[in-house]
Each structure stands twice: as structure tokens, then as C-alpha cells.
Length: 272
Image (cartoon, rainbow, N blue to C red; front, top):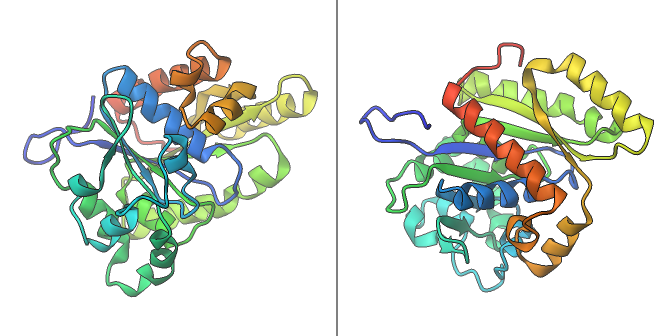
């Protein structure tokens, strides 16, 4: 499924989930997809690049107790394998966040070629044989997001069918184009509609607008509202393990199948 490295070894497919707006299900998308990948036999690594540590908490891990974090990876202080933390699910590991990541985000640009540090760290060989690495970016286009996009094969941008979420797309597109022109020319992106409410007409109209405008860069899968998502977050258990038959689990499973097909084809979005 995954592209080959020059030495003939399978490379993990790296997905950065990003948006400068908060509250658009970035962390949920990373935790649920990583869980589904692992459950379906595709070992995955989830990397928490947000200083708030919500992704870390979503797997029931404590950011305060995390001695090492994504900060060590970005600064090159520790190899990938020494920072990975196992979860309750076989085939799924996490690189947690802690308070040090907030400091790193401020001082990272002072390091020469900081944009490549995460890519270099993730390219280190590891025993786990990950097929997917998912990066949970902070709600900004700050250096941490730039480093994530430089390391990624694909950027997933979750969006709501609402004005403020759509308004922020221009900034994300400018950021992606900047990364393409400077550090990662092969970066692709796809838009993912989340928190979709089909009960009213507004979301329906906006979705049709998105499908017309971004047909070549929009996932077919749409993620709707599901109260079970909040319950799973409170429990610190990803929803595919917390509520296996929930609507959100089924929708993200459909998204995972769409991603498998996309990765296998390795298509570049010409319209993106």
C-alpha cells in the first residue's frame, strides 16, 4: 500500500491533520483513524504536536507524567523508539505531548532548517514497522504545523459547513502552497467535512458548494455529529473501542477505506 523508500523498504505514510481554527475535530480524526488503522492490521503511530495534549489524553495518557514527548523528537534529543508510548491496542503507539512542547514551538525557528527536523526523526528506522504516522497539529500555522507539513505525504484539513471554518481555508491553502514551494513539493491535501448536521438546510447547501468548488480535493466521506464522541473523550478511549457500532465509528471506518484506496493510487491532486 505504501510508497517504497530508495532502499526498497516500505516507508510509513505520513498524514498531518491541520487547520488554523480550533474545535474542528483534528484530534478526534487523528485518534480515531489511528485506532481503526491498528484494528484493521495497519500499525500506526499518532504524534501529538499540540501543547494542549488533547490527543495524548484521548488515549488515556497523562501529559504531566510524560517524561519525553514530541519536543524531544523535534529537537533531536531522543530517537523515535525511545519516545513512543504503547497504548491498550496492539499496533498503535503514541508520541505524547507535554509542557515542553509549548516552549519548543517558540524557539524552534531559531534552529537551522527547523522545518526538516520532524521529517528526519520520523524517517529513522524503528522496530514497530508502522504503516501510518498521523500528526495532530496545533490550531495555528505556526512552526510546529510547518514542520508537520514538511514531513507529511498528505494533509487532511477538517472543515465544518460554517462560515468561520471556511474563511480560514485561504490561510491553510497559502501555508500548504508555501510548504510545497520551499520544503515539500510532493505534499498533497484533502478536505474532510466534519460535524455535519443534516437536519437543517445550511450544512446541506454549504456541502454542495464545497463539492462543486473542491471536487478534486474533497473526501467523499462526511463525518456527522455523534454524542458518543464526547463520551469516549471523557473516558479516554477512542470511539472505535468505546462504541464500536456508533455512527462516528462507521463513518471513520468508511474514511479509512477511502484513505487506503487513495494511498494505494498515490494520486496527486492537480486541482489542489
